[in-house]
Length: 335
Image (cartoon, rainbow, N blue to C red):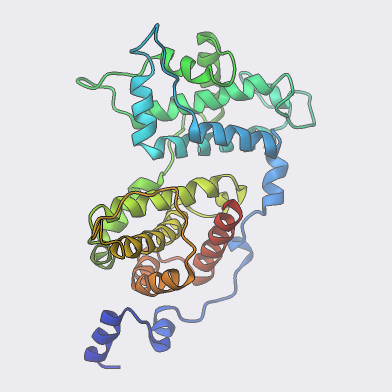
C-alpha cells in the first residue's frame, strides 16, 4: 500500500486488514505472570460484604454537604471541590476499596490501630453489624484524605475545615471530631502514610496533548468536556465491580475514554440534526445513546484514535481487548 492510498484510508476513517495486521502482530500466549486475580479471589479478601461496599461506593459517588441555615459558610468549599474534581471521588472510592482488601487479607493478629473488622472475627462486616459505623467512619476519612491530597490549601485558597467533613457524614451516621481523626489515622497507618494514587484526569489530559487524531475529531463546542464527562460515567460504573482492579489505571482510562468518545460523537450528530441548536454540543454526562446506526458510524470514526492509544500505551492486544470487553459488559449491566 503506497503513501497516497494510506492517506486516503485515513481521510475515510477506514482501517484495512493489512494495516490492522501490521499494527497488531500475533502475540505470544499469555504467561502465568500475566494472569490477574479473579473477582472471586478479590471478594474473599474484602472485610465487608459486597452489598455494603456498594452502598459505601454509592455514598462516596453522590454525597454532598447539606446546606445549613445556622452555618451558611460551612460545606461550601467541600461542595465545590466534590463537584469540580471527579478525581477526588474516584481516589476516595479506590482508597476505600484498597483498605477493605488490605484489612480483609490481614491476619487477626496483625498490628493495627483500630482494625476492628478482623479482630477475632472470621466473618465479614455487614451494614447492620456493630462495626458498620466504623466502616462508614473510614469512608468519610477516605474522602477527607483525598480532598486534602488533591486540593491546594495555600493562600489565597481557603482550607476545608473538619466541620465540613462532619457535616458530610451527617447524611449517613453520627460522626464526632475524635472519630474522624481516629479513622484518618487508621487509614494512614494501614497504608504506611502512602495514600497517593494515579487518577484518570491526568491520563485524559496526556491523551489529549499526545494524540492529534483525538483533537482533530473533537472540534465542536464543548466536545472534549462532553467526552470526558461520558468517560467519567463509565469509570464510575466500573468502580462498583472489583474486576476494575485487574487493569492498570491508564488502560482503564483509555478504554473508558474510547467509549466516551463514541458517546459524544453520537450526541454531536444528534445535535447537528437539530436546526435549533446547530453545532453546539451540550454536556450530557448521564446520557447513554444506543442508536445502532449512529454508534456504528461513530465507532468507525474513532478507530484511528484507538490505534493511536494502543500504540501510545503499548499494552498487549489481548490485555486491551479484555479491558475493552469487560468495560462494555460492565456498563451494559449498569444501564
